[in-house]
Image 1 (cartoon, rainbow, N blue to C red):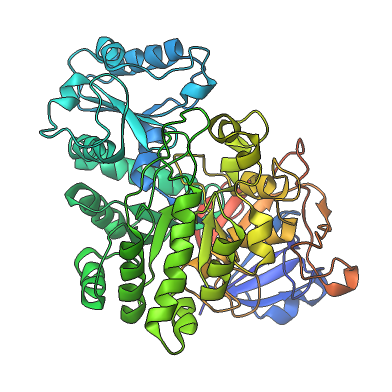
Image 2 (image 1 turned 90 degrees about the horizontal axis):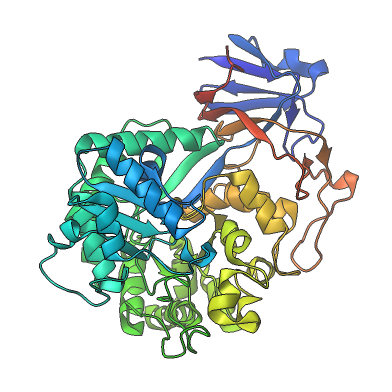
Length: 537
């Protein structure tokens, strides 16, 4: 038995909001208290002086794409390019310094460029010569490709273009072909780079949203077999029609659940999110639906009967409402105790950017978890943002309505969707509090909980202690450098708790825009140090 005591710090815990120390015994929190009582923790094998640092529950990033995010770290990151010309120059320079293999780039955002358009295939060919190249848009629902990569695609699926970026089924085919050109060494480096970066942000677990098909399955297996710094929960985007197929899918692939990026539709930026009314800036287009209503219901029933967590990617109002209707239809067909059985599986709705009252009520009734990305609103919300340009101000304003979901009792789990937005839990919590549309955000405590305990809830872990700092909880911890702590203000529309000091609500760092956010000093997973800037020597 090994006992480690962390002392002389600040501990974020409802058990004792004045606590300055805690003890960890064999990976579990075994004691919490103040300096005056630290001797009661037991005889320590090691004592760590926190020097005033803050200890908080470790974060869970509940929606990532590890390979793609890792490739953005190790390869060609285009998210910082401010014009089409700059983007193409970055591609040209990268191709010159990386003469072998496929050129994989990510992150261009044409709506922010003065040219107002994406690169053409001819322009990309000019930048890379005869090399295969794949450049995904920031939302990863469309991409430009070089002629050399196009030559590897035998068919021309829906969404294909010989000049413009590919979308829909064509994008999935192109993406798979580009993945097939990556070496195992490239994949491993990308996986490890991203998981290490997550540990450096105080993240103790990620939920990988893997594609189905040979390339996606190979990548998922390699990731789950990797001895990385933090755990990975694997979500496979495979639709099933029977309980036997659901169980077989997990046994075959090693996945933990059948959801993640099981796409009902696409994305707003690529104009493939499925809408009930056309896009304002593309009046003939209402997006794309990839799953029918009946397929959604069949998948939910099959997974529920099998005891397997299901989930869907749904962004547009048509897609989100379809999932809501599907949950209610599944409840009707499952019969006695149906809502209890559905809730026990913690089925998930990823993104849920355009929700109405009926969809939210359906999620709440069936115990569904909403996997949300607050940085989407920070990046694309507001009166002049991408949402407003694509949808018009009236439809854009209620996007990513965290407050309405929370007020209805829907469990929330925050993620980055990396590489779509960068990993950065504190920035995400801040964005959730300071929503671009007044009245749509969360209280600081609600936002913080959604990025910590909420991620464990989204994984089907119902233990009330996990994701908190309490005696008996796993020591999944982030130690951060933070400024003055403040008592979070309650929003009466979403909060069911008190901020009176007597309520023992623990303090949080100041999340006011412009204030320096906390920085991670060390990260622990079940007491094991997976990132350290020197706290542990």
